Length: 208
Ligand code: ADP
Ligand code: 5GP
Image (cartoon, rainbow, N blue to C red; front, side):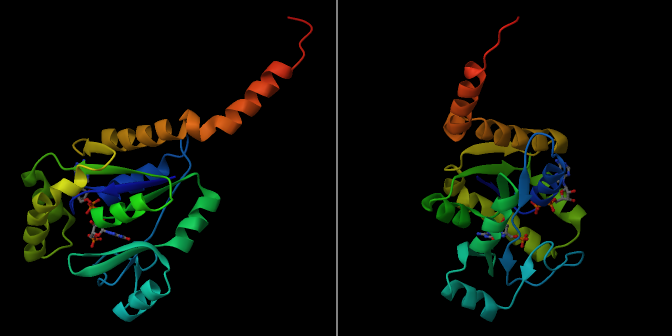
């Protein structure tokens, strides 16, 4: 099952995912690392934040149909490799993806089981504060990114879930609750439920 997280830049996606991946007692979850043509920011590491590749390599991957989805976001290409997702699925029950609405749309149309979560900051002032605190983007980039979101709003209304990231820990708990509830749905557990009923009710107990 894939879980897509989208939010305006600086809302807290990376921070939330990092914290979610540490909560291992209720869910089994791995993160998809995307490919991008954008240049590395200070503090970022290749293969940890992204696979940083050239435009030529990215185009070659498109031609070879290696992406489950890809999109141009803020002038750079970003994409999720099918093989990487399949590898994560061999280890974990759930995979989390930090991608934009164009990617969400493509995965929704595919055969993959997925749910999407749209996250907003409590206010624009707080968003700008978080972007400045992160200290990774130029002023021009901050203005451009924070002005784009309202133009794209209709795409986010199609998401399955909506959360406001005000309190960090509570937001992580809410994301975890969504994943836990989705994992517990009868339609995803029918086989296991039937086998357990058969096992429980075929046991012969002579003494109580
Ligand atoms: P994104 O991945 O969405 O671009 P980040 O995870 O890099 O955003 O977060 C941007 C900044 O906001 C970071 O400095 C992070 O520590 C901070 N942040 C994230 N969530 C919260 C929150 N709920 N309250 C206060 N600060 C937050
Ligand atoms: P950033 O440059 O700030 O890391 O990411 C910019 C935007 O690209 C964010 O909205 C992020 O969700 C999106 N993004 C990151 N990886 C992917 C991806 O693989 N596919 C798509 N469609 N968007 C991505």
